[in-house]
Length: 315
Image (tube, rainbow, N blue to C red; front, top):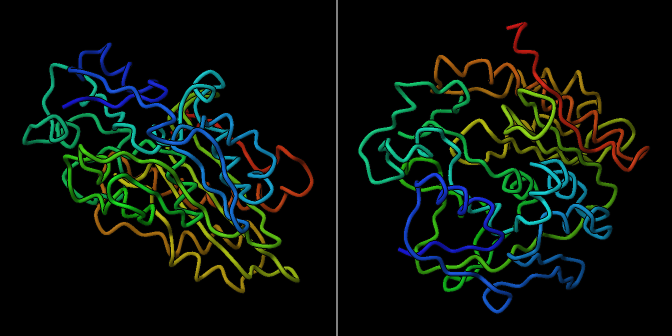
């Protein structure tokens, strides 16, 4: 099977480690667009558009501020300058067992998940299937919050959630077949009056994979939330949208503390892992802090994106 390369930030790392082998098919603008197009107020982002382009596009920031914030808050400036939209969505798991060429796992044709019985400190807290490592796509979290659609060739258009599946198949990071190429992502109409924020909780100050991350979209009228979308990442084998929490937020005060209480009451895991229960405690805090970022987004162009490091020594 041939690997498909766009920016190459993931596939080249895996090949250097010896995790991936075989031929490479280089993707070009003839295979997937490298521009952002607008039609009737909706943005279509080509799969080869760089993440730095999304983060710096003023029209995207105005219509989809949570997406711009997430694209500008992940990885490093060097990675964002090279990594692509399609690659950001279809990257492989960052599990250290998967990345070890000497270790077998479900995603490399094996029959076990060594992380489940091994070191899964940074694994999932929502145990959806045999694999217990989180999906790595920050961009996927943001696009879940924006209810985006992806277009593939062949195959046409599908909701972003269908691209990732339900997390029950431990052999895959997405549902595309070897013959399919993701060509673009289309977002819906902008929501008037939207405020949005993105936040990641990380283990050090900069350039770290998140322990928990959140994208929140809000519309506030007379101090009450009238529209809400909440998506979280780094907690399951797929990005998650929290529909129950969204419903609970409608009509509630636009107050981070109130949202934190709602999140603590509605975010539950039917199955979790002992070593990652700490993430369940972080989720309400991350969502509340993201709400605070969203509410402050009108006062500063940088207010809606942030990260903060977890003081591990206090645990």
